[in-house]
Image: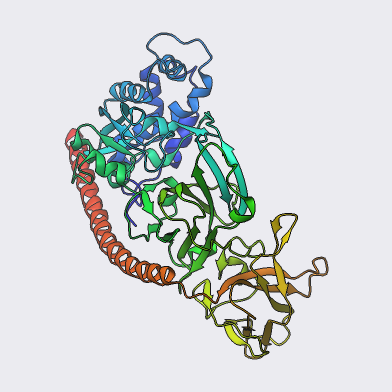
Amino acid sequence: MSRLHSYSESDVNFYYVDDNAKKANPQKVDTFDKLITHLKKAIQDRRHEELYLVRGILVWIAQSQSHSGREARYNTPLFYIQQLVERRISPAEVFKIFCGYAGIECEQVTGRAKAIRYRAGDSDSEYLKHHTWIAFKADGKWHLMHPQWSIQAFVGYEHGGEIEIEKDGREKIKVRTEKQGRPMFMVNDFWFCTAPEIFVTRCFPDDIKWQNPDGNVFVNTVNDFLALPDLRQGFYDMKLCLLIEEKSCVLHSKNGKCYVSVMTEKDGAKAIDFSYELAMEGTSGDDLKPKDMKQLVLHQICGKERNIIKFEIRLPVVGTYWFRLAVGLVHEPDKKRNCCEFKILCKEACKDCRRFPMCAGLGAYGYGPQAEEAGLVNSSQTDAKINMKPNKGKSKQTIATFKTENDPETDMSYAAQIIKSGSDEVDGDSIDIILEGTTEVVHDKKQGKLTVNANVPKDGEYALVVTAKDLKDKKNKKEKPVAGYLVTTHEDEDDKRTNAQIKQQERKVRCENHKVAKIEERNRLVDIIDSTRMEIDSLKVSGKRK
């Protein structure tokens, strides 16, 4: 995974600079000289003096937006903040003015940007053009920053002309109209000194040299820029890698199915949580039958290191779809960020478009964090999807084994159940049915091993759900679902082909990451050497003055 920023992240710390900037009352630092003097007070590391100064300017502007209602004298810092909030001047213009007073070399850059109105697969439209951002030179190196995205965020915006079909396993069938959202003042560190190779995926300059003033050009044409996979801040924050064959924001379904897969760092599923949304182009959902739409996306956790997150998407009708992912930490479910978005073109509907069986509220199939919390480790089953032949008899085959605590006195109790893919209808809706007698769980406490055996009576798709119960917990007497697997009797050639492609892409990504790690280590060492030289030169100059 490439770096997030153009400065050395191991060598720079903004804590004291940010804290000092927040303490600068706009009414007291009422001239640029006073403001710059105040911001410089917190700068101890002279190697990065200019970088820290621009950072202080960013934080001060962001937090001062709330003071814009007060009267300010012309050509003062607060005057320009008022002009900014009233939209009389752009954020890029404000930053260029502030950088000028601070003695920082700064250029205003124009070009195309994939901003809030952008949707994956959009063509080159007017709303993509005429955006502005800045490039500034600090301590001998150029950095890119999108001022507006660094100090403001829009919340609540929604695209119009869509029908929301499914969100995290729940059927919606909701027609959307465009919602403008509202601005929120904040500092977004991601867009300050963003790494050029990331910045160019969202902002394509009219003058190509401003992609990366100190290095190589990454994207050659506007068409290349528009075709790039639509990867958002959450994707980079969580250090994800994309594992799809089509390196594009537009995917083409095959046989009415589409696959999107990402790779996390090792054991990523333990800490990272995804949510998804499937929407379709249109303004009316009258032709869509809710019973055919429920659970069209299979969310899976796969891989030996639990770091492959795969989504299998079944498309019931011909049309244009959008698939969106958000990502966050498991313990912060309400703080997810946009991760990625794909436009899916479906020219052939999925034949026999069965809905996936619900996974007992687990959210994802496979070995996830709930299983480990329940004392189940080292699952033998690395895939979330299991193929088996139907068997009407009593014999069962081993589906998965787990290691458990090697303690005969353990008070954890485990069970499993097979849930039939809903096909019966009650009041027009589908239901899930638990099939009795189809599972067997053997817990060898001395060996610390749990074996799950099962069979299915006929062809179809089923959910195998492993449950756990802490016998010491007297308050919660119910068994809790901790792991789920999709059991299918169907041989799916599309699935086999996709799994082979994922493995191939995974190998490529690992090789690329290894190369990137070497380059970043080299750059880190070069930065240390350059910084040391600058410090030595500074000491020499100081010594001569004395």
